[in-house]
Image (cartoon, rainbow, N blue to C red; front, side):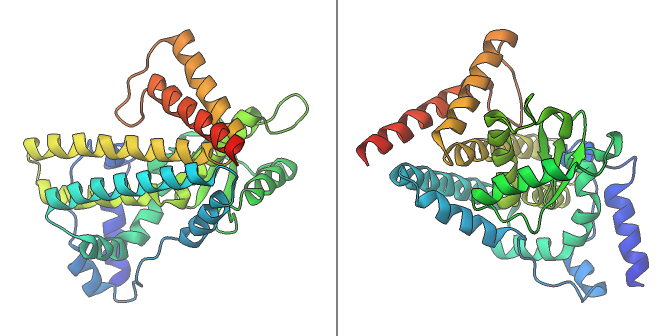
Length: 302
């Protein structure tokens, strides 16, 4: 019975017609089985624990030891406050609390894992292969030097991805685009890797996914509710990207600088971008440029 129920729910969540990227963005709306029903037939589900929580704490400790530690503390406090405010808004809208969210996470975690790659990185449409051991070692060594525990992360080579993309468990790398002519990781690539790793450390993929699961039960195809929730999730998505930019930049001023310059150049060459999920490139340049200045200022004082 458990197996059949599990398979039917997975089919509901991740069928070709139902999901792919559409589920993550809320294009399709489904009535899902309640957490109580899932727990009734699947008693073996354990309490959910974010797989990279300990690594996140380790990374924070690493940042707090930097010469620009006051800047680190300032931004970390701001990020925590912003995240809590957004969660509070979501909780108020959906009529839930943290305990309810944890129950949903516990109930649906295995189903999320079944489809995380198709949702976030659309891996089914890309060529995936084993990464060159030398490049994989370079990435692991770099992240390890930044106190990022990569033991629970899989590094996978793909293409047509940009530089990188992260699900909860897998870091997908466009292998052809990550090294320079000397076969070394560039500073920009390092900044991008640190950005994507933040999504893993903060469980961003699963958090957004589970909130959309709860939303679909709450909205019941109501267009006004859908409009309100979509706007709130857009703010949540942009917050996550801002946090990933900031925390990656806090590792070293060079990463804040190269990222700021990248976004400035992109605006100059391609014009202003518009996105529902990311801050626009002018905004990203502005806050990364400011971060770079604050880090250098704190270093001089120290």
